[in-house]
Picture (spheres, one colour):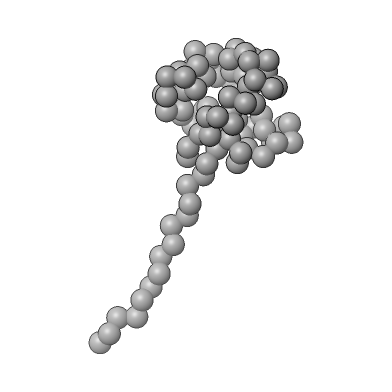
Length: 82
């Protein structure tokens, strides 16, 4: 999973009055962690992603605007020549 940082920053500005603390409380992580992820380019963990997904679901937002899910692998079986 990857984070759409620009979209999350915009969400923080609009819904949380540019407050790392308010966003952190909403998604259930530490405010310093939100800062490190958005500004210092730390990699968010599963708790961070789960918090965003839960908050978005509760507030009727599509979490896929903020989280890029990996594309599923496709396996193509080819017929081998005998």
